[in-house]
Image (cartoon, helix red, strand yellow):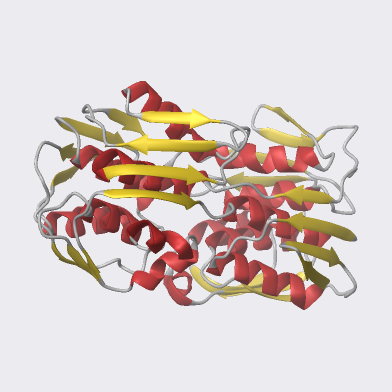
Length: 406
């Protein structure tokens, strides 16, 4: 796909949040009846819907899913597609619910290192069959202790699954978790559970259900995706004007922090309410430092922002990119270097030199949606544009992304 440099002036809606939607689908799977309002158009969302359809009665109407659990079984086979969140969370839920369950993957997830899943299973004496660190893995009903142990240094997704599953399990557990990363996504899970009446107390690395935790609501409304919005904001800042719709200012998604950050930088960003709309326009971008340890999905758009800054920028937290859909740290380094970027890695830090226009050239998405979107946005302010392979990789999270370039 050829993406030419251009000045953009467009209005675009972000997709509904897959992070919220996948969590809502897991809650629906465990509920007797549940309604999810606003369905994202993405491959990960499709994988979650297929799981619901396999084990529930689903009715679709007016962009809503009405779910009624009708299949009584303790034997499951979950096909998670390329969603690491589904794989990790359904592993945790299956363990805590005492299910026999096979967790399957396809595409990039099939070859992804998920050693934390196997560490969790062994740490809690859960019987399983599988070839660590890769899926598939099959869990068998096991007698687990009252306290569940988890090391969340690789991902918080197992913790999210445990928090959701524990709310519906016959016997409730104490979840003892160390080294938590991406804490904002844990907060997102807790906030979504709170919306249906489930509350957790937290003390000294332990989560346990509050005494008044009773499911009181059977509906969740999904809001717009702030991770996707970050790419659109950067496009406006480096090459014209973008009006962004379908966002919720009250969202608890962690990547909403990007809005606070660009305000700190003093970029040309205005907000109107009723309906909520963010307008981002071409700006002088100062050099900056950003610790992305808890915001790894913001690193690709931040790299593009840094390349268009007035000096040398630093992005911390590179280690969080090593085991995504691709090795994103290596992908960003190598693909952006191909098109003239001055970018390097030192320990856990990206060092990025701005002040120079990218030349352009042929690049690879590495079959990674966020790499594809970062390269495409960078092409807007390049000398000759880029030729990008596999543009369909964006379908994992943002199929309508290419409307930005129309």
